[in-house]
Length: 437
Image (tube, one colour):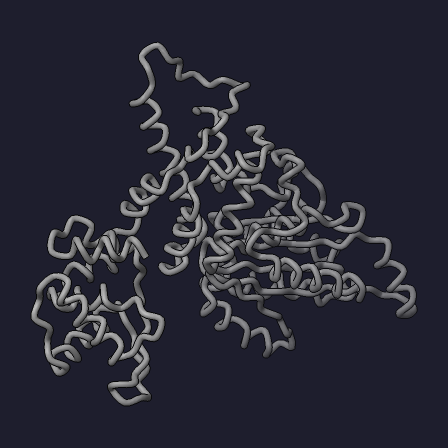
């Protein structure tokens, strides 16, 4: 069991993705042509690079989105898969420099294939612009084109470029001028977290005649998170040696991954939080393994161990997943549910309807009142309770219809409701009904 848990933990660690440009730490199965959950963005980036390459000109692109949305991984994975005889990639994290101007030194060193350099920032900048990105003096366009065809396309990735946007915009503007030079076959990517910072800098580029495209990475949706999970589990099975398709299904009890993905997406969590959930599952499973192990059992890793799961036996059960979800998401949603008056809480239980509006909800609420022997509120008080639920961020309502026909949208799940009231004696019969649906 320990070997399996170690492999799961490793494959749900972001460490496996930190240096995707360097193939040394990547096994063959990791060398994917696309990135799970980011196929659209991967293809857009590929199209952008191909277009610039065919034109024999430089170009630049801003990539932005909140942390943990796959910006760096998608771009660096793509660059890793480009033909090495046509492209060379330089990846630089702008946060690595105490002085922003030292970026010039690092770019010069990498362009010149030097292990180290004693050049200062000013000299490095001068050498970059005189040796690599300069304006040709040629007898015609054909000679210029012939010279450029002999050179590899340089892909320069500047990660965490927010630092330059905020404090050192002159350095950023200088670097973004390089793709516009006659000699340049530079494809420049700036990666930023905050879309607002990008939008602030773009008008300034427009004033100096530079039209820079923007690619925005939205937070992962449920289906994308699930796709990433399934991709990682495929890695786990291959490394652990599970080849039987039926056995692969026994790593996670049915619907557990879907539940985790839904919860993460509804809370707009980034993929790092998703991996945190899985690694916490591994920790709890290992603790259970130690507690249940016979005193004569060895807990040392067996390099040849492959567990043969029995029917209805799962490595990560729904019970274990619920425990972890409870840890991670005993959140504002659950807290707000618990803080509502009891009749408002009863309305929450009554809300899982195919057609949900004021009238259908009121009817369902009255039915649930009869189950637990409560006297239902009148419509006036019921409406006030709905307003209270909405103000707590648990429902939203279409404001463009009459009260009785207003469409209601739930902002919580059955799992969250069950979690909030799992120990309630009053709601026990309704909880049983809810969980059986």
